[in-house]
Image (cartoon, rainbow, N blue to C red; front, side, top):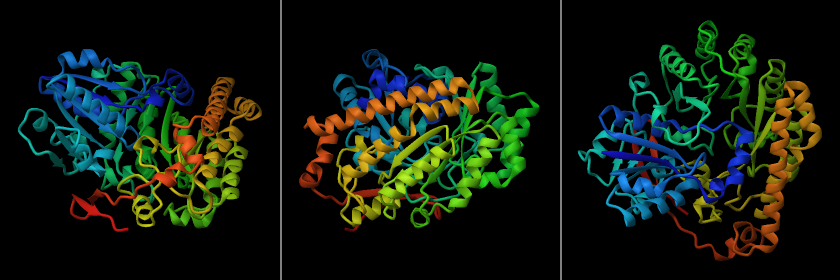
Length: 481
């Protein structure tokens, strides 16, 4: 059979100018799930193609002419596009549509309205049986694989859209459970691959000629001794890339040996969730860190030439406007290389989603807006548009010419150019959104600023699906409210 995997992108992210802007933020990469599942099917003798709409055009017409099965991956903001593609496929061909991913795992009944079958959870154990017709249930609930070393590695030969950076997942899940996080709930419980397995995969990508690599673990340094061993092996076997990105936490700065090894192994770009400087806000989201930890981590990153991407959550109930701006100023003063201001987003299946449903604070019914760049709920300490405007204030304040020159002096002038590129797109995006909020009546921004969502909202109480780590099963839950 001919199987096509699609990772959709929203209309905005398919726009060429947006794709160009994303190149300044990082290097094109591909979600590993479809590459792993596609690799399983390829080994079984099927013909497989994988497309990432964020990085390149999907030749849907050609795919419709030859595909027997389409597998579509969903995140919440891409669910409408996934459903649109499913409808087109059903209208134009006899191909079967299988939908999976984080959003479909949280709301499988919704996804089942568009798919022939829905896979809930991690799909390695069932994908072959589903595609070949041995599993015929409409919604298929999976158990998380325990032995990650036994899984097929991502197969980049089946990827048909641009990719400059290889993604490596050395673990699944997270030892922390921040209230707004989806992946720690999708990939539960926390599991590790052996160091030998990780090094084998990295060696493959090095031999393939990749110059960039990303560790996609929710927290690469969760197990510090294991992270050290991976770095030692990378150094000893010359598995060094021009740039390696990873997700970390502030506590990595407590271990000087770890920081030295990260520097030597060229793990030189890290995203750390600062989230807020407000201690009450950090406690509300169960972050498990304090202001002093953030300062220590930022200084350690600079000392070890690791470029810090500072993630700030905008809209935590305990935060007011001054708290948000204080956090943004703090990130800029610490010479963070990039800023990721993430508007608190109530993703289905998370405690924040449950809370806002119960408090009747869900505002926007369009899943496409649930991308951490748009306000989709009623904030506690300010209006919805006021919080949205704080997002634009954050990016336009952080990205400017003087700070770009400062980054150039610290890390090199090539990074200053990238920072200036981000500044251009940040200011252009803010200008466009504010113009739309005032003049374009059909847009999300106009509706948000003029309280149209609030006036039109019909509140509902959906059923969500959550993974229960105690009995390793998925359970449906009707929210109260």
